[in-house]
Image (tube, rainbow, N blue to C red; front, side, top):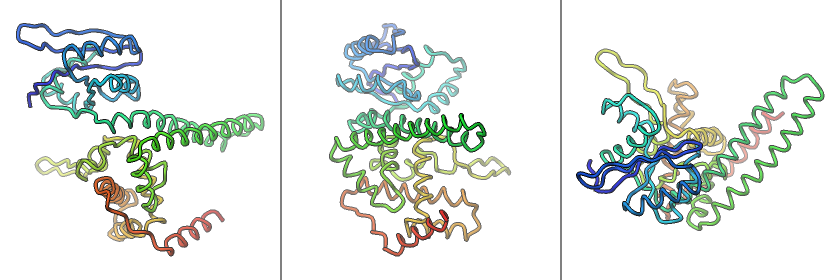
Length: 334
């Protein structure tokens, strides 16, 4: 698929931006530049994009690209994400086995030109701020888990006291990060309403809804099958000749997948439909995780329908489900 749009490829790293501007007319030479990953570099890239009437294309790089996206959006420069795995496979298809930052920038530009990329919409860019705050909360949560695990095996009383103090401090940071995430969601009426509607589903809490909104802004615009592949919960075939291996899930957006897994786990108690579906899969002989993956897909399908159809309301859970869930939790705590 050949595009008439000029795609500027940008390889983002911690300290610099490697930029590739393709030739816009025959006889012209492409331009490669190395810019600072900061405001000065953003401004120069903005001017290049304006002059060429181009779309800036980047790969997800664990958060280093978020400031760049926010800056470009502020000045009305279109930005698109290029999936890193597909870009690397595209390079192999071209026979390009070398890899460095400047090569990657040119590769992103060619991938966007020949394969195509999806320009981030307004709600996608709004999700950038939410994603930054959600990532901070997740980092603090991971740190707390590490501290709690260390506390369980620590025998030194002084070290135990330090660990407990640190855990309390991290708990406060997590609570504050969650408030900031909710503030970001409430800035936009449509996003706020969608978050509230997501939490009407048994097993889905505010943090799960925030993780979905931050990590999967495409929800409500794509089919269930495409969303499953984006998240990485669609088992992929591995068959050739007489060999037919078991299907496995892999790739995708890990943060969204983790949130769906935890929500699906909670839904086993708090959602009568999903709980019954999981038990049906287990009765068919599927191991726990093999039953959890289709339950996650069913949950994502429900959330996708909620996002797609503003008139759709999930069925309220019967009071018996809530009573049983509370009773089960009390038994486990006893």
